[in-house]
Length: 250
Length: 253
Image (cartoon, rainbow over all chains, first blue to last red; front, side, top):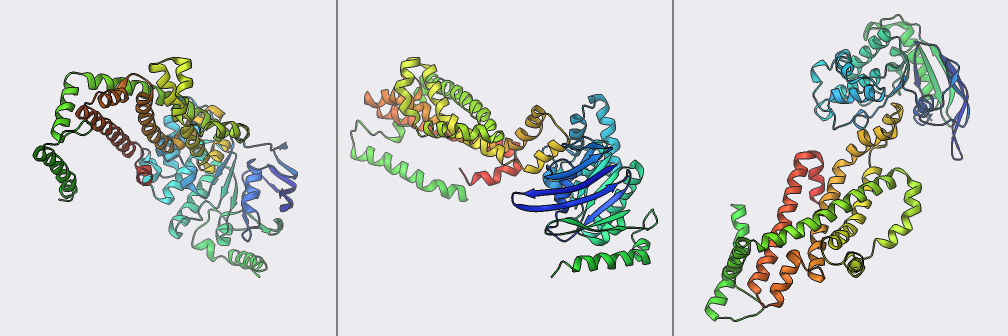
């Protein structure tokens, strides 16, 4: 569904991404890892149409991506900046529906359905400032789901959350992805998170950012925070990814 | 307790002032006693002349404030949104900006004659530049993430402006309004003192030149009170409307 071919990106004289190629079939959950500065987030922004590539192509269903599209939703890491502080939870979800031209009469029901799906059913009238970090990130996910996306691009969405909240949100995200069949492109620096969530893990090497390796994750679904993380396959992938990362530490 | 102590020194000074005039029997064409000033203030308010003058000043000043602020927000938003326009008009803007508002009084008189229109135009001129600069900064300071959200949602420009940018900039625009209110009052009264035969400024000048110091000081105190009440009202409004912003901007005033 998403085809990236020989993608390169320059910021002025610096090459940030070089000759990146991969395919993501519809409904797949792909995680991208790599040392900091390898261009993970930049790659996500190019796929989302927020940044223009310097060379190569990004296509969806065979059509070249020229800019942002309504059915590509982006979940940002800094949820506090990505939400409208003057709108309630309800109003923030409504923004996406308003942008999509959904009739006012239909909005209310869809908003409440979406909020319930991310576990915020009882917080419709709360402002983001009255919510915890985990709840704010759930709210941003709800707004992205309101776009009825075919693709969900996520930029270290759980990076700023505590360990327990992070694990709960990981499971909720997997359930949502299974429910909706959405294709997920998930950027993270947490190797275990990547293995836990993904069907495939793309490992980027830095300077310039390029695809070093792509790991298939053969772990059964639904996944389980304890059992999955103890499986030999999980541990094997964990070792492989750690060794890959360590090669760039020096 | 603290507030009572704070009043001790001003009250003592007023009492001493009154006492010196009473017991030394000072005669003056330029100074008056606190008691006579209070009487003049009550008289002015009683016969309506002070209120008429206040109405004139607030009408001309308020209209100028409205005009200058609206234009300032529109132009500032445009500058903030389209850097090319901002750069293109920068020189023109910076050449006009340093002109003291009061220096255009003669020009304004030639165009508008005396009265409301002239004063309104000068107040608008004075408010326009600072509001433009603050509005441009307010739009620029909207978190870039919010602009990306509006791009990702493919919102049209109007929706982006009214649903994202202006609401996000509103607390800072309100600070610009507070500043502009202060400027409007100062400029309106100044224009009246310098040229325009109406309002509180004219009342000040007339009282001074006809050797009625009690009336002059009464008007002066009234103008001060007016400015104080206006600012207090705006600060209170800011606390109610933008609770998170209020704390940070108090230091600036």
